Image 1: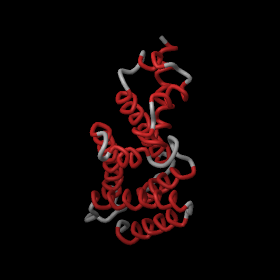
Image 2 (image 1 turned 45 degrees about the horizontal axis):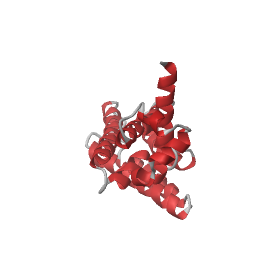
Image 3 (image 1 turned 90 degrees about the vertical axis):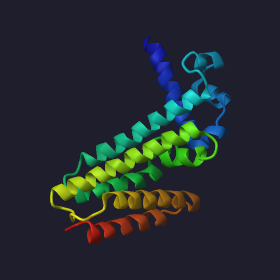
Image 4 (image 1 turned 180 degrees about the vertical axis):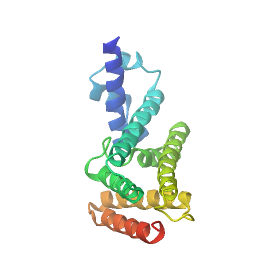
Length: 197
């Protein structure tokens, strides 16, 4: 039983790395077989098809991403520090990605946009979860009296995600950290000017 669970988890883990790097279409069953050192029957003993593997691999990647945010947030106290840590968590996806390269939510959303409705929906749900997570931190800051009462939590969460995801993409394209540094500086300045009392 334990061996079967371990094998299933290995398939998910290795597939998550492949899908996040090459996308759904760019990753074949042969690639998964090679990465896991399993034959086709060994993989289909645990999953019905490639779609099922891809959906579970995304869930695995999302869980790792949210875990990183939670672990980093657990080390700070104030709401302003928590926003700063969220910004830094996006930055960490460049030097220390949770799974292969970049942000698994963004990578999946771009890859599945026109090709895989179920994966696109998963990415949308993951993005909403991340957005809601930031919105909760904004509300906590307002409740504690650290942030202005009229701060629009949805607007700020969307701005933070758009800015940092875009910065991660530009940093990867140009292999230059100036983009993520610019984004961090902008968001920190925006937090100081528009969120803090």
